[in-house]
Image 1 (spheres, rainbow, N blue to C red):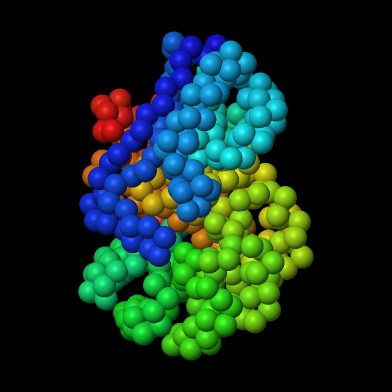
Image 2 (image 1 turned 90 degrees about the vertical axis):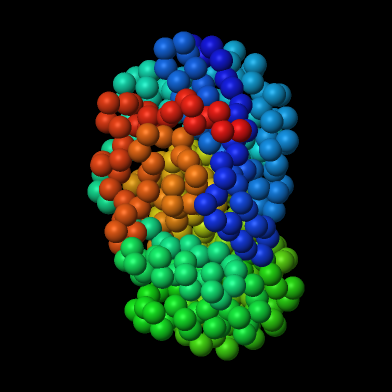
Length: 370
């Protein structure tokens, strides 16, 4: 039985700022939920983003305050969690990041109560193997860009996602620098909704100095129909991130599956259960999936993304995140989930196999970084 549910607003400074067209961050914008039954504690994380799902820390806290006592009263296991989720779907739809943190905390707790992993609780294959990550490089000066790229290349990355400004002269120079340093690397670009119209996107894509594998969120107009129209003008696949927030959109996207890639971020999609449903649909219908991350997420959300990657492996084109204390001054766990050489993470080395649930040993003192 659940005894307490706690909301923690977490602010951890970054070691360097991270910039893209929609925002620049120097610290986390993260909420942590702690679910406590008096014996075990479950931990969940969500990252509200105003420009993604119209959520903020304030709206997340308001939602939490509204549902806290009801959750404690009504949710005691996985079945009651799913029942509550379905019954309160309209409110949850507006508060995906907050619900994500609540759901992950409860899944972590219930798995600990059953002395099993979250994978086993949800009847999925246990986490296994290694996971290769994509290098994500923020927007900034050419000098900054070159330094960050060199650091990633030194680690052995060969798959890159570049945040762009839309200024062709500067962006093209950066792409040329990366290709000069690593001619064999793959590149996808994230525009973060920088362009006002289709013609500007077409012009930019047609003049690129090197081919790219995909273009993420090109238009300020986030309507799916606008992106379908754009997809008919360019051959480059379009990654849907901010433009994809609802499962119901998948039926339409499936009609144009050659043109689109879903960027699946667990916090954006409202937790593991929703994300798993989306991932399964994409695999079954041949829609490409990129497993994304929130800038500044801790090892809790990184672990949640690994659940999805493991569940649909090898049916995803890229995996983002895993930066841990490469970016954060501190993480919340004893052994942060981070990639190593070649951008590869081996979770069996980093996870605490004496702990059930998410298999993370969360350090209470680090939760005081508010």
